[in-house]
Amino acid sequence: MALADAGVMASIINPAQVKDFGRGLAVRIKTDGVDSVVLARYGALLKPKA
Image 1 (cartoon, rainbow, N blue to C red):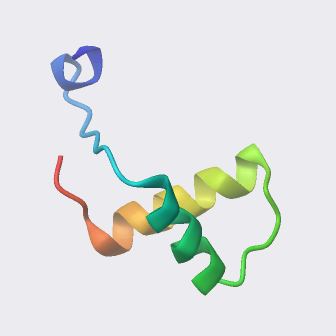
Image 2: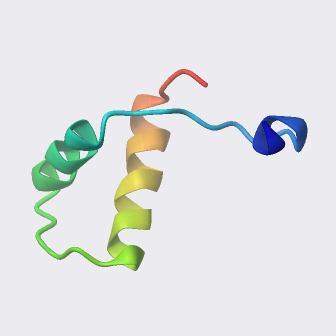
């Protein structure tokens, strides 16, 4: 709950959904930097519940 206490919104999402979302963006590379961009886009576009 440290994130919630700090006022940061966090969601638990299915990794397979994010992987499929990344494939839809034509992302084939698997690095931490690319993963963070895909996660940020996923959150910005789909706005999962916190």
